[in-house]
Amino acid sequence: MTSGRNRKNPRAPIALMTCESGRTFAETVARHLGQLLIPTTETWFACSEGKFEIGANVRGHDVYIFQSAAGPQDDKSIYDRFLMLLHAIEAAALSDAQYITAVLPYYPGSRQDKRKGRTREGISAGLFARLLQSAGVDRVLTVEIHNDAIAGMFNPTMAHLENIFLTRHLVRWLRQNNLVGEVVVSPDVGYLGRARAFAEELSANLAALSKERDYSKPNQVFHSTLIGEVLDRNILLVDDIIDTAGSVVSAIEELREQGARDINVACIHPILSGPAWHRLTKIHERAIKEGWKFQLVGTSVISHSDAPDWYNTFPLEPLVAQILEKINARGSVTGVHNE
Image (cartoon, rainbow, N blue to C red; front, side):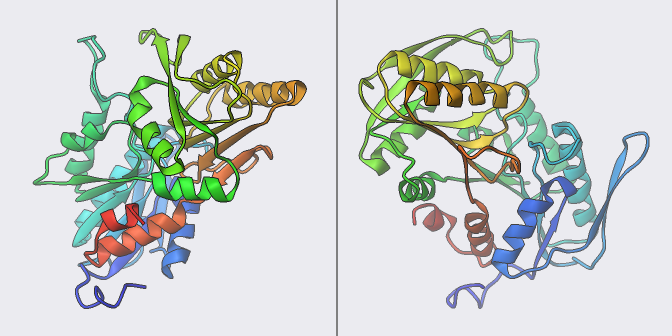
């Protein structure tokens, strides 16, 4: 599936493989590329130790290893899945792969990218970068990472981070599915830059919420202050990560108090853990009772097979397949972002 002008100079024969937690996503990407996944065996022993074996020759290949670090697809933790990815990377390196890319759409520890004013804690985003490099990875392909500065945590002589930007592709899909709004709202000032990109693509107004958070307590937002005008407007609330949904529910409540009408929420990484579904279901029930509309959009980075009908999935696999094809053929990934 390589383009005519790049077919003469591919990096190496492409080889796709996956950790078990990333299998559904990997199989769909492989179908778009017209490839089969390399056979692999992931083993978990009774003591919870794991290992990864590759069942075919990958010597001299351009290897892409998929892993879904977050999501409800199995009973493994983010740390279990990340460690299995390290096993897979090392297995490929010891098998003399020419080049190894970890396809890790959700980068673990991306919200632990700095100390936030406290000195006696680690910086997990950097720790994970060092572990990936030590295992033998050459590139980590991720999606809309929480902080672009994490790319600087990789040693460029060993590996680098390739960040997929979704704005144009996601906006096009939101338009096609009538899931946009007259005002784009960022749930906090930290995401304002990305929200502005959505607003520009949609030719919409922009607003933001300023959150007051106690960082000593995870997933706790005490108060939000609106910056901008939402009265009698339909809203597109955008964010990169929804975990327990406390922040997004707080934002929706504030927007409704300020006179907003229908509210669509779009996020890149719909982790939706703990009380998230309960909280969001309550919002949907409130919307029905009060006569306004609520819809939630998440990408297929994290799959929720039993989601309700007000949850919409943006299929990311075709875009990832296109980017892998460009990387293997030494093409322009930036061009794909801007299409």
